[in-house]
Length: 231
Ligand code: ADP
Ligand code: MG
Image 1 (cartoon, rainbow, N blue to C red):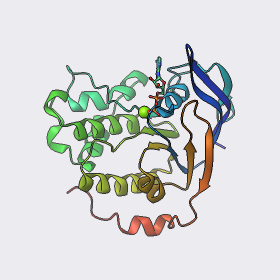
Image 2: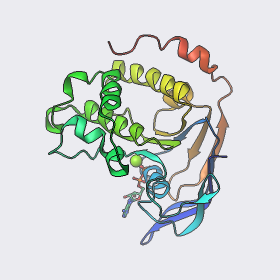
Image 3: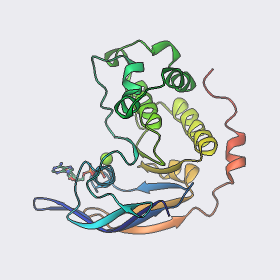
Image 4: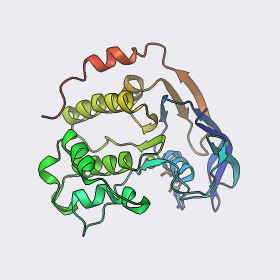
């Protein structure tokens, strides 16, 4: 088991946000989290990413307790936090830079794969919301941790680009043997992408249901449709 969350609780003052959350992600699994707005989905990622500390409960990654520890997962936050004074390319290599040597060639290749080859030297202010999301996505990917946590990564995209990105994500998942934890408010998206879905209740959020997607098509089949990406 890659990620193992045990009886996680989080409050902000009087606000009980997460209640006794138990959740797992196995190696190579694609897991989606569905839940109403304001239920605590992003807070859960803040906890996994070490940006917040739980009141109770444990978060284990590969059996190591990571409560309050940063840098153990690849994390794409709901709001892209790009540095305005850095170009797109400089923004995506950030995580790799903190760790040592950024690979600019690799970063360029990834940007090209999501249709941003012409925007390497642009600044965030010149990008649309959907483009910023893709930049933020590539930044998370380049931080290269085993677990990729994506917080509503495609919410700002038009339908057409979203479908392309969904298929592209499946190919990334397959080729790079990633384990993915994916927050969405779209039931359709969760069923299309995930092996397993957790459904959160309203606040205080508890796991209301855990669904193994029974009609989830095999990866190969899902990937068949992913041959045309951004050209
Ligand atoms: P979701 O992502 O499911 O829409 P969030 O996790 O963003 O929900 O928020 C859950 C609740 O916790 C909201 O009521 C939000 O206002 C509150 N909240 C989130 N972060 C903080 C914080 N740092 N301080 C106080 N309240 C917070
Ligand atoms: Mg959220």
